Length: 368
Image 1 (tube, rainbow, N blue to C red):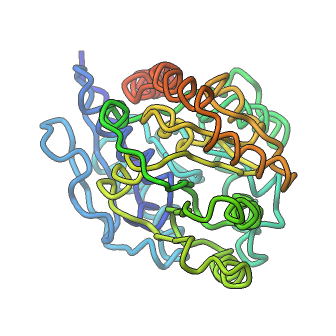
Image 2: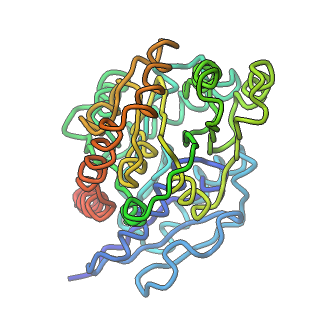
Image 3: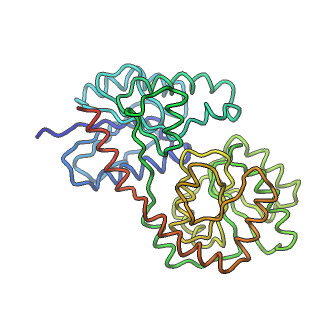
């Protein structure tokens, strides 16, 4: 049987610059490379990405394109005009687009991944000059793709609602969690440190987290708060608020950090907090559960379905609810012991190997 030649559109990937979609793509490709199948992969990268994606596997080929993703207009033009030609030159049978957008005219079937539809649900969180591109490119990418992948049922429902996609076109494929986090759970050394892993964007609700932490420290001044994640649209506002609340020495914004540094934070965290008001999946919550960190998070979908009873849920629209969750998460020892025990059990239900297997099935289906 002839090998299926699968193209992977990695033109969007800027290391340390695109948040969770980078973690998604790197883990997906790694898991695909471990599947003992005859398919051949051609990963189309930009100049910033590097050559390590899929490196070391005979059936993985990196095809670097002479474009820089940091200049978004050039990347979009290249994706639309040149990528289909490059795919045809390599005899691609099906193209996987893991970062929301796809070439609108392509010579082969396409599978496009939608991590969320925040631009439809909360357009107020986007810059006015970005919104037209999000609206146009994502809508038509969904229309031209033979199969569309959603990270969660919540995103799948949004695709039906906003883009009127037939359900049979949508595949809900949850994300996985790296095995390293389960190793962390077995050797944690908690410090008086509360952790949140999040891009500094408005919907992450980090201003409320800072206010609740300021109230919490009135009785527990020995605790620190670390917020690890890409600097986003609300960075300046959050830094200003940190100063106003006199938290300069107690709250750290790390920015994007290497994975080894992130593992260390999970290993040392006393508790994990995730107050987001909107998510497409919520991978940091799954990582915290796998690492055995007692976790409190918003009772929104898809977090509620993903975490189940393994977290302490709270209302993300209430300062008091967040403060109460913070107090219980740090002071209630029986609760902490229960959450630390059930977290890895729940997270074990999600694996990148499953994500890769289901994604490969979708690609084969699209290729016909």
